[in-house]
Length: 294
Length: 283
Ligand SMILES: Nc1ncnc2c1ncn2[C@@H]1O[C@H](COP(=O)(O)OP(=O)(O)OP(=O)(O)O)[C@@H](O)[C@H]1O
Ligand SMILES: [Mg+2]
Image (cartoon, rainbow over all chains, first blue to last red; front, top):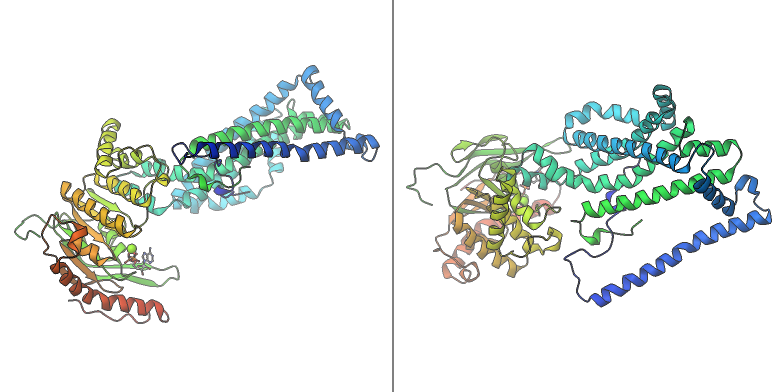
């Protein structure tokens, strides 16, 4: 499980409110031109990739029966949007998967933060529960998926549980590490200023660990989606995972890819929201900290 | 200073020894049988070679660390845990980077249960006093080093401490800013008159600010000598350096400090540490 370094994903390089905004003309046009160039060039690999795929498929080099074909994938997505899928409206499937992922994500994040900070703050707890966490973390998640389906049935709960477990460990290890890395000077300062243990946790430990925690959120929403979809894949009545497994069962690679496109759109949107949240919560950080934004 | 005062000293260290367990498992003695008394309202500067236990002394007084042996008394009572009425300006930057300047300064009162409105009011007052009015909404990384030190000062003084501990607070500043900050510190000190323990490597700074200068030996630290600085107040740190009495004082204290600094240097420059730890005779 990854314990992503907090600075791998940093706040955007846009200047801070109140920082140096002298020479607005200079500062304004350059990033704008840069953004235009980036956006234009960004699509080149995509176009080359899809175009090449399409051409090779049409030329018969790639057998569309196995490899699919971009235009047909697009048509499949269009079909689903207008006519619905074999298992019901596309929006229902998206809604179900999204619900599973979001609920699992929310529970996993909260539990991960609470447990990570608790174990990071209280040595005793870390010593007692550390081995258990390590053992649990070493269980292959797919096995857990099967177990959850046996326990919780084919409904939403088993997927939520799987998503939650995946998210929990990612967030937990980051929150734990972030808590341990808190500057001892800051804790000492807060205590001298009169902070209680609780206040130290909320005013020093949590904000400081937040850099780590938010870094983990980027990864863990992906994990939540994976959890939901793998869960559906293993057995479900609705959802994008089921859509994929049905397309696979009827040898329809375009269907598999079409579901992937839908998932990618969801993941991108979620990523955007998390980045917004990050900018809000970490606005205190110096902009120099930010490297490339992913 | 006022020996007729019947009230107990603000700070009293009696025969204090502090040992640390090193990562290697051995025991490192940072302080040995240190005795130090600071009267209420007295400004005491502590100088000594690097690693002699100055920061350790402050962590004992503040209650962040317990003494291994001996007694640490604050206002006549033994220190157990973090003591009330103490402020600490740390050697490294310790303002909260995620709080605005205003929130940083208001943190103390808020931690202590002062209503928000009142805490903010006090914080604005103190920001004005340290010359940072108009910077309330900035975050620490948007300030210069000197400004951050002022935030730290305001953050500490807003609690109206009876004891102010300062660990090389101006060490990271350039010489001019340091002198300005020294004057500012004296001015602020006059406002509430806490007892101060001020650690510095800068002997001039020590003499310009303090009522008494304590010289510590090379580690394990203990008091080598104490010098009363009789220079009249109010002082201007920037000008007092040229005073003849100041220069004479400087020479006397430097004489005492020099041996320790050289000893400490020889120890770190020469071979393995903690082999030869000659017992220093205290004066
Ligand atoms: N937590 C600790 N564990 C082990 N050794 C420590 C610890 N804290 C301090 N020491 C040791 O105690 C000695 C005194 O440290 P201290 O920080 O008090 O020195 P100092 O006089 O403040 O030095 P400087 O002027 O460089 O700040 C040093 O040799 C240091 O290595
Ligand atoms: Mg020190």
